[in-house]
Length: 263
Image (cartoon, rainbow, N blue to C red; front, side, top):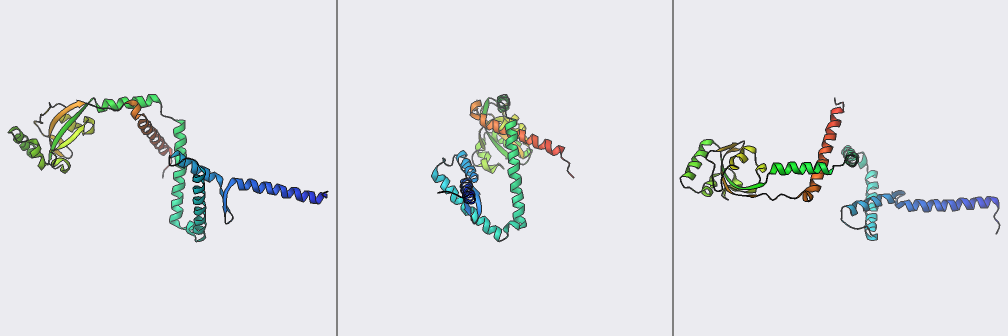
């Protein structure tokens, strides 16, 4: 068969169009009412699902995501058709979402460029262990409104009354019926003035003077002391790294706010 020049040109154009359509189809997951859904959108969702450990990449997962994206596109087209995209509240929500996405991208990039070092993690761990201390204390307390009531309780205890029985009158309703038991904790878990009230006591001893904090007056009893069970550096390294990264981001944000012209 011999093509004439004009027919040859038309055939070449048709073949080119076929390849173009094939390429376009490969780039799209589906076309809904003439609106294309890019395959890259599905790839991104698959990546997110896999990264979160919710599933593994598979034909079944991709088919489920495809159906979801098609359904979402159908609903989106209907919502636009009914004018919901022009609703002021919807537009504000979209702007808020846009800001969040863009800011998160900036934050991820900042963390990547300013990574938390092992030295910073070690320094924070050392600070934590120093602050926490190497001992844990099992303490009880009775909380009252005024110093006179606290002194009266101390006098009763010296007279032979049981601390646990007197604890029932404590303002701390969470421990009143449990003998004032605050369980095991490190001194750093309490307000400094409260911690100072029991760290100098001997086992079984009760404070001979009321301890004043912002919530009232305390009578404190030390039940026991034991070595602190602190986690190793490796056990808490991820948490420390995340906390330090958040601190760096907060400092970066504060720096940007200071530089901004706010009227």
